[in-house]
Length: 445
Image (tube, rainbow, N blue to C red; front, top):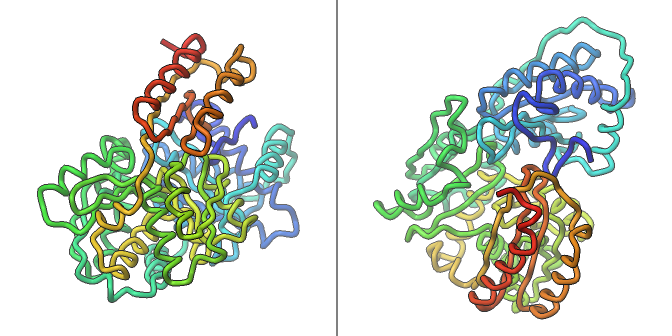
């Protein structure tokens, strides 16, 4: 598609399609997209803490409101909070101005439908078609944005009501990294209400420090702090609060697959893992599938992106799904990934099993993994690289079920991502080097 990638529309601020001009046009297109049979053409709008957020939000708001739509502007709020607000309110759509875990110079648009779910590819294609057309709309007086009173309290109330054992979470000592993002004010308030002991870092956004040397992309920073104190767990969020990277009490960083294993085991033990099914992506470790097979839990893989996980969960009638990156979806509690909700359920699982996080995580043994991100000037289809696909298939046949190779272009950055898993680290390095060598003529120096 021309504008939409793995997770909405994203790019460097000031360059099409992440500019005020495009945001205004997108606002008008969304009004047209909603149609007359909507809930009054109402839009819920929020943003993360990037300097460019207010400019893009105001432009989108103006495009939508000038066409006759009504907008409630929340301001800075986590992405899952906007999804929750759409689901609970009478909105046709929700939009979050955010570039998630990317640096501050990037921004973008994440879209949710009236149920608080990410849009399907078909819906995104329809919006793209509208954007490419000349839209003729009668201009209405822009009445300005409406507001939702105490939105922060509404969302935090939802989180607390989603966890059934709040008392069991008291007494936890938690260290948090809020990535200088949209979760910076929400996370401390939540854990204060839980009665937990907590310390929070990177909670002072200035428009440019979001994700800078902190958050889910840099968990080693919090891990060092963990080793200096006595904490039960560390929690690293990303800029818009929809993913979680956890650190155990020893200061070891856990992957999203570790969390998925713990969550699957927890729900399975309580009889709450409907159909004993888990949905992951092609980037999840092969060891996860092997470990859960011993419990009779089926693991289904889909393409990268929490949107793809959500739709696969719906197709499989599964209640749990997520990504290795830390996007976790609890289908009976929320319609999208939510870092704070994941943190609460992780603590709930620790209390249920009566085990420290390191012990729970040690039950899952991931296969050795190697990854490389190669910068590209142009995303040449892999089948147009001479001999590459036959070589790749031969490597996959040799690994069989005891390994995995994934080669894909990033949906949000000019990168080709290579991931190799095998039971032997030497084999991982050998395959990774061979793939990199074959791709090197098509990558930037």
